[in-house]
Image (cartoon, each protein chain N blue to C red):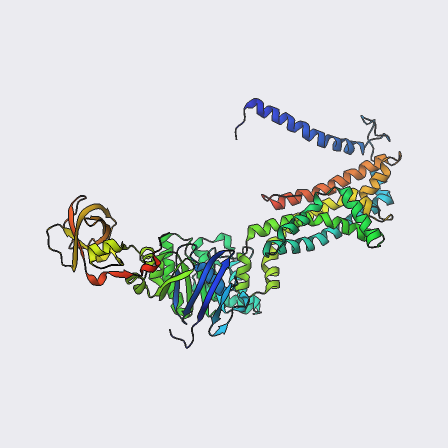
Length: 348
Length: 266
C-alpha cells in the first residue's frame, strides 16, 4: 500500500435484501493506485460491494471511507468514484462526444473546454473519429471504450469496473485486458475490478479478494491466491485443483486434514520408471485430453481418488501415454496446500 | 399459427361484419353532412355544402370547439405533470402501500363515468362549496387523463431500468439534472403518446362532463347533444360530428405510431 491511508476502507460492511444477506460483514482496505479485483461466482456479493462503494445501494450496516473520509451516507454524485457499468449504460440519445463530456457538463465546465477534454479522452481510447456517432452505431468493444473514457475524463480517485469485459468475445477481451492494465498504469489511480473470470483476475490484479456467499474467502496477490488457496472453495474456484479430503490425505500424504495440489505440480510416468518426487502413488490412466500447449491426464489412483495432471507438451516430451495404462504419479511436499477445513463449501 | 382455409374465411367474415358495424354508421354521418335532407332521410336526396358553411358560421359550434380544446389541453397538461410524478414515485421508490396506490391511480379509467360524474359533482358543490365551472371540468377530466400518461410512462420506466440514471448520478449529476438530461429525454415519446391519448379522451368525453361543467361551459359533445334533436340543426350536428371524429382520430393515430411496439393501455 503506497498512500498513508487506504483509497477505500470498508468496515463491517453488510447489505441485506429482505432475508438474504448479499454482503455479510466485509472488512477491506484497498490502496491508492492499486489494481484490485473482486472475484467470485454470481451471487457472491462482489457486485453489491461495488454498488455500495459507488453509492447506488445503502449498506444495512458498516461504513465506507474514501481516503479517510466517511462517505457512507453520501449520494453517488457526491463521491469521488466513477463506474464503468457492465452494460456500459451509455446515454442513447447523446452522441459519443456528449456522453464522454457529460460528467464535465454537470460540473459546469464550458462547452468548448469540455468538448476539448472529451476529445482528448476519446483519443486515448483510440476512438477519436467516432465523436459524432450515437452509441447504437458502435460495436461492443467500442462502447466499452466510450464508457471508460466517460468515467475517466472526470479524473476520479477510484474507478469501479463492473464485469466490464463480460460482454466481449475472447480475442477482444484479451486485447482489452492489456489496454485496461496500461490505462491503470497511465492514470495511476485505484481500479476496483469485479469479475467472475479467475483468469482475468489473475492476469490483471495487484491483489484479489475472492468472494463467496457475501464474505471474503481469501485476500492476497494472484500468486498467493493461486499457489496457496486458503479454502477448498478458493482452490476449486481459482484454477483447477486436486482436493484430497481427510481420508485420502491420510492414505496419500500420511496427514489428516483437507489438502490440495495443482495439476501442473504433479508429474506422471509409466509404471516402474523412476520418478523424482517426495511422494508417489500408483494408478490407472483414465483419460488423456490434448489441449494444445499441454495435455490433461486423468488418473484413477489405487488409493481411491482421481487426480488431474497437466503436462506441458514441450520438446522433451517423448512417450505418448495410452488410456488404461498403469502409471505412477508423484509430487513434492512443498506443493501440497493445507486447506482450512472449516469452510468446506461446495463449488456452485 | 396456421389456420385451415374455411376457418380463415369465417374469421375474415366476422371481422368484416364487426368493423362494418363500427364504421358504417360513421360513414352515414359523414354522407349525411352533405345531404340536402333535413331529417336525415336515407338515401340522401341530393348533395350540398350548405351545412358545412353553416357549421363554420355557427357561433355556438365554434365556441364549443374552443371550449373543448381548452379543457382537453389543460387536463392533458395536468395529467402529464401528475402522471409523470406518480410513475416516477411508484417505479423508482419502494414504500408501504405502493401496489394499492398504483391500483387507485388506474381505477378512474374503469369507473363508470356516471359514478365519477355524480361523485365529483357532489364533492365540488356540497363538499367543497365550489361553483361548477371550466376549472372543475378540467379537474374532473384530469382524473382519468392521468391514467393514460401514467400507463405509458411507467411502462417506459420499467423498460429503461435504472442504469442510465445510476450512470448520470455516478458522473456527478444531482436528481434534477439527471431528470432533465437523461430521464426526460428517454420519456419524451412515452409522454407524447400518453398525452395524445389523454387529449383524445378529454376531447370527446360527455358523461363526466355533464355533471362537472358549469352551466355556461359548453363543450363540443354537450353542444351536439343539445342540438341533435332540433330539426334545423341536425345536419349541422353531422358536420360537427365529422370534425369531432377527425380531431379524435388524429392524436390516437400518432400515439399508436409513437408507441410503436409498446402496448397502449387506455
